[in-house]
Length: 172
Image (cartoon, rainbow, N blue to C red):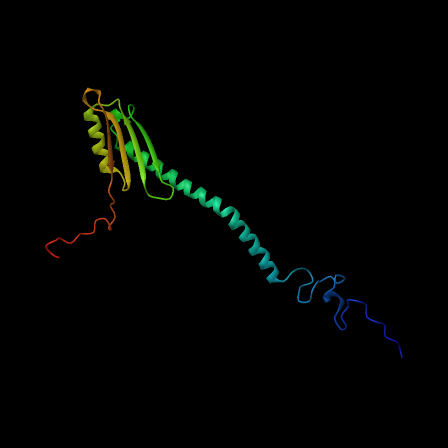
């Protein structure tokens, strides 16, 4: 009879050498493919990369999207105001347009110190008719005799909630 050799340390009896769990085998722990990791390990690594990207790039991308949206709202409001402004006034007035980052509020300041009283009132009437809701219009100008005057106009909400009919006191 032939004497059996003792098993090498770390080797499993009855398991081919390429599926052993020791570092001497090529496949690593049991249950893995000889050429790589299991699908669960690949999923864990991919989800870790996605989570890292979402936490580092996500807030920056969100802030850039909000700033872009605000800038587009400012540009469209300025374009709308210029369309409503009489051509004779465009070279004598200055606009300052600001929009909120997290709100729908808009602010427009107009410097009309070089314009006459009638031109100021005509421009205010045109702008009020075409301004979007939640917009505050501040007009600086001079009245008769060179007296400085400031007008503040705020547009009302035009949504269905703001136009809800209120019950009359007689119906109550």
